[in-house]
Length: 130
Image 1 (tube, rainbow, N blue to C red):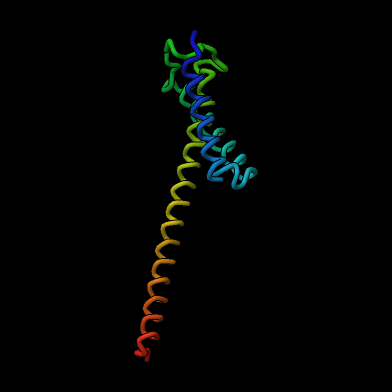
Image 2 (cartoon, rainbow, N blue to C red):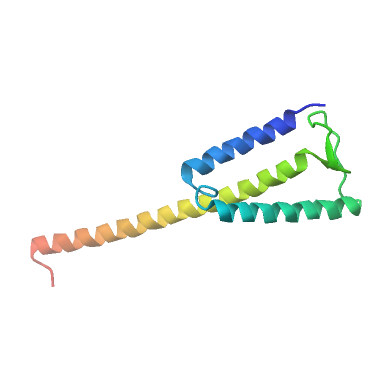
């Protein structure tokens, strides 16, 4: 029995929390909505796992890095934590990319506006404005 995988999940999740806090991407943007989305997604994926386990498609992997604790037959303790991590990571990537694209679009608009203003000022200064 080892807690290596569980520790890695918790450390990586902590890094996501720090990233989220720094850039206000998910929970620091709208905690209520983020909580609802994360719970719904987690419930969906756990139901998916349950269907897969019952149908025999999914089985618990044996690894020396896992705790060996099962919260249900063939469902290790780490699985819900991994699914929550995966959903949180997806939300951070989604809103992170959106934030970057919004900033890039804003910079382009501002740069375009600045160029237009500069050209008008230049024409006014030279007396050639029509």
